Every structure is written in C-alpha cells, then in structure tokens.
Image (cartoon, rainbow, N blue to C red; front, side, top):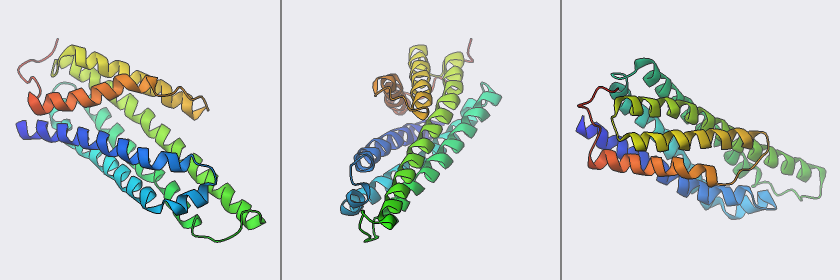
Length: 219
C-alpha cells in the first residue's frame, strides 16, 4: 500500500510536470501567426511537446488504476466514476494530439499560401488547432467531474486533511467552469486554474511524504 501511495504521488507530479512543459512548448506555436511555417520551423519543439503530453495522458490512467483499490473501499460507485473519468480524459487527450500531428504533415507541403491550395492548407491547419483545443477542453470537463467525485471520497473518508479536499473541490469547480466557458468561446484566463494546481501539487507531495490516513473510515 505504501508503495502504491508513493507511486500515485510520483505519477501526479509526472502528469502535472509533463503537461506544463509540453503545453508550454506546444501552445505558443499553435497560437502563432503563419501557423504552418511556424510549425515547420519548430518541428523539434512540436514533437517534444506532443511526447510530453502523451506521457501526461498515460500517467493519468496509471493514477486511476492505482487509486481504484483504495477508493472503492470508501465509496465504490464514486471510485468507479473517478476511474472512468480518468480513462476518458486520457483517450480525449490522446485523440487531441492528432491535430498537431496533422499540422506536422501539412507544414511539409511547399505550396505558396496565396494560391487556392495554400489557402486550403491554411484552413485545414486552423481546423486542426481548433479541434486540438476543443478536445482538450472536453478532457478537462471530464477530469473535473470525475475529480469532484474523488475529492468527495477524500473529504468523507478523511484519507487526507479535509482542508486539502476542500481546495480540490474549489479547484475542480474552477476548472469545470473555465473549460466549459472556453468551449463557448469565453477565455477566463489562468486564475480559475490556481486552486486546482495547488491541489495537484500538494496532494502528491503529501502522499509521498505521509500517505493516506487509512485508520479512519470517514464521517
């Protein structure tokens, strides 16, 4: 059990770190002007960012698999809900990577942008970017809903300090709101991400240092 707790903590940190670095490399390129030329001149950064985001997608499934035997002892249906949400999140994240992969293929074409073929490639590239971010927002909505179930189990069972569970609740409500608004075209900035980021850093550190409080059955 102690090894599983440490492994969950490490995977949380790996997931968070790989996503932050990967998206930090990828997103400025996807938001850049003259998209296809920008992708072509930054192929190494795009590929590295994609690999890091793939690591994140794989890590979240590992987290779900390791937590399932622990969480189901306290609320089996919510534990399965959390497990399913993380698998769905991983699938959506992996599918979202197809968009940047398409950009890598399109960027190899040497068709002048002023021609009709060039304009088609430009439009296809923009569509690939929109699909990438739409799928990401969908993944974050699924993550938020599942993680609210996760935080409820933590709060009810007192597996970690209740204050940490409350921070998680606030963080995932913020993420749910931000991602939902993003889908309809409203950008809320990074403010709503802060409580969730705090939770996903403090929780794994707590698990590595102390682990779950398995002596309580909840209230």
